Image (cartoon, rainbow, N blue to C red; front, side, top):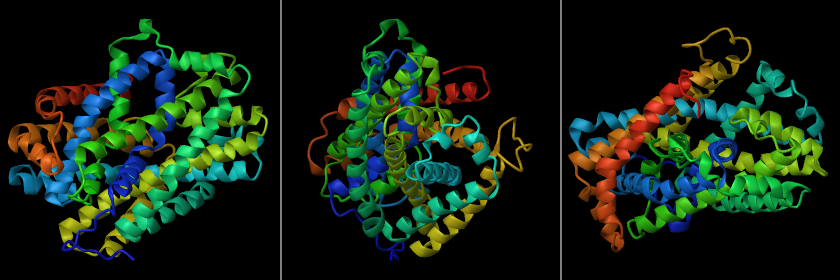
Length: 455
């Protein structure tokens, strides 16, 4: 069992383990329920082009920054920022609050995924396709809690076993399985009658759809999709061997994450397109796409229960690798801050997650009348973490690296294992371009939450 304290830092057994674990964190629900919707809405291929351009520039710079901070300090964000600059140590505490807020509701949604997987496995796709099924399920009291507890216990068990036996072992098994499932389901969908019209809609660039909103949508999606500013990449970076090259690892994580997002779109957009007779409006984003629209699509397919079961198994893999990384960021923070053992820190985070997760679940049922600035408990936590704190932490990280410790802090760490091919570009991006991009994400997220902007 994992018992490492602050004196002995675990490391991933090799670069592959690190890349798969970090990619597992990045490949989450956002790739599967937000990316296809945005790609469909913003002209298919043109959105993909903008997204890819941002991934190899903006996304790459932030990922390299976080991995390098973690590896250089050998600390989670809780203490890493203090090690960089005592005056800016508070940024690390803020960075640890982000995964602490996300963890409970992410596990609740993971419970929803687990429930749907079981429904499909039992051959009840027709039940899940019913208009009222999802609403009735999440507004219940006991049923959603049972599945939530199963999911959070599974996550906790992986984290208790530590970096090698838990996180790395899980990632080495689940990430290749997730890739195989995604490719297999995409191929199956492409063989459906009429699917090519959806593929054309998804992949061919519509330059008329290119706008500032396309750019903002791609930027926001990339930021959330790659697990940036959540403390995760810094935490995982602190377990990354000094023998490995950060630049190469960051590229490989990006490729894996982007490939899954693109394949998810190739699987989801054509199937919904065929089901809805070419109506793009059927591609809603978020829970409605995954838990309302797609079950109807599966129910209308030959072998729909099998396809639905495989799809929700894929989503389960994506959800649990992400929930493990979110929990690990908080657990590592407690271990670094208080010098406590892994088992103790994991139990503390699990109990906290269960209590707040129960509140989130009740927010759709017996506490549905309780609102915070007009939002349910889950939506409020999502707003504070994703729309406010996430971009704020990302912006502050760029400021600390760009102007306090200077870009050489990161560049020298990357160059431990060979040349940093993009170091001049990196220095300009981290100081001037990335903070402005992230400020745009912050403003956009707040305006969206209050209905002042639609993306």
